Image 1 (cartoon, rainbow, N blue to C red):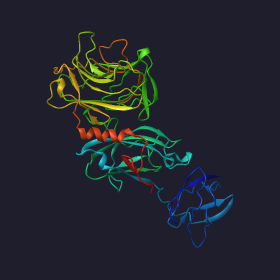
Image 2 (image 1 turned 180 degrees about the vertical axis):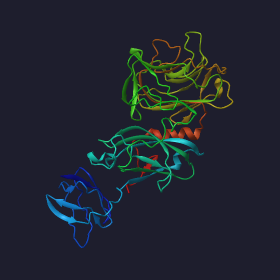
Image 3 (image 1 turned 60 degrees about the horizontal axis):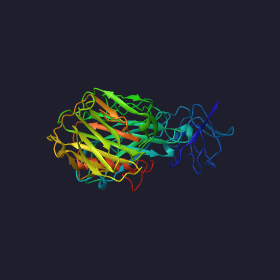
Image 4 (image 1 turned 90 degrees about the vertical axis):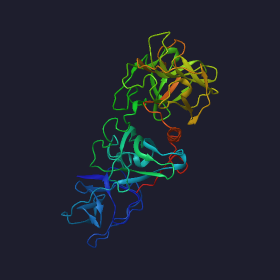
Length: 428
C-alpha cells in the first residue's frame, strides 16, 4: 500500500524531503542514484505514490521505491539509513529603535503570525503537531538553547500563531534576534517550559482573556469567576472579554494572594475598547466592603472625556477624547512611593500629565477582591461597557522604556514585517 507525500519547496538539489499527504510543488528535481536519472517533478497537483517505508529523499539517496501512477521512477538499496526529516527555521528580529532608551530584561515578547507555512502538514504547511508542539523558540542561531514560551493560540488550519516568548534581554542599542523552528515530527509534546514560566515572579496575574476566558497565565493560578456570562470576542491580541454594563457583567476573584498592598511597588495594565461614552469602571483590586471603604487601585472613566486611576478614594486623571479604538493604559507606583502624586500613568505608551484630587492621598490598597469589568465597591450604573484584553498586575514598577517597548510590540500584533516591531525572516 502506498501513501501520498508532499515535496517541500525551496529545497536544493539532493536535499528533497518527502512528508505525508498533499500535492507536490512544481520545479523540484530528484537526485540521481546509482546512475538512475530521476525525472523532474511536474506541476503541483499531480499526486505521487511512495511505499510506506519511504520517508525521505536526501544526499543522493532514494529509499526503496518512488513511483508515479504505479510506474517506478527510481530504486535504491533499502539498507541505507533514512536521514532525519528537514526542520524549518526563521530568524525573528526586534527593531531596537522601538525599544526606548534602556534595555528590558526578562521581557515577554509577543509573536503574532499568520503564515501558510505554519499550517499543519495536512493543511499544506510544515508544522507536524496539531497543537503546535513542534513550534520551538531558541535564543541562539545554532538552535541549541531553548527559550521559555507560551502558545496562547495555534490554528493549524489557518496557520495562525500567537505566542509569548521570554527573552533574557531586549536591547535598545542593537537589534535582538531570536529563532523559531518547526517541522520536527519527533516532537510530540510542548517544550516551552512549565506552565507560567514566561511570567516571572513579579507577575501576580496575567489574563489573556482567550480560549479559557477566566484563566490566569502565571504559575499562581489566580483564575477568575465569570459573573453574568461575560462573553469571548475578538480582542486586541487574539480573543478578549466583552462586558455589558446593562447586564452587570464582571470577572471576579476574592482575596488574591500576592497583590501589592499598602504603598508597595506595583504596575497594572490593560488594553481596552470602550463601547459607550458613559461613566464606567474598567478593572482594579482592593477593598470590597461597600461605601466608605476606598482602599483600592483601579481604572475608571468619568463619562466626560477623563480617564482616572483611583487610589484610596482619591484619583489621578488626565483628559482623553472618547473613541471606540483600542488603547493601552498603565499605572505604575514606583518603589518608595507613598501617595497619589507619585503614581505614573501611561496612555498608549506615553507618560501623561495628570491632575490629582486631592493632591495627596496615603496608599492603603488591600486585596479583598480583584475585578475586571468593575472595581471593588462598585456602583450599579458604572460597570464596564466594551472589551478588555491583556490585563496584568505586577509587584514591580516598570520603567518608561519597558512600557514603550511593550506598547510597540503589542500595538499592531499582526504587523510582522520590515516596518513592524518584529521582522519575520524567510524560511530556511
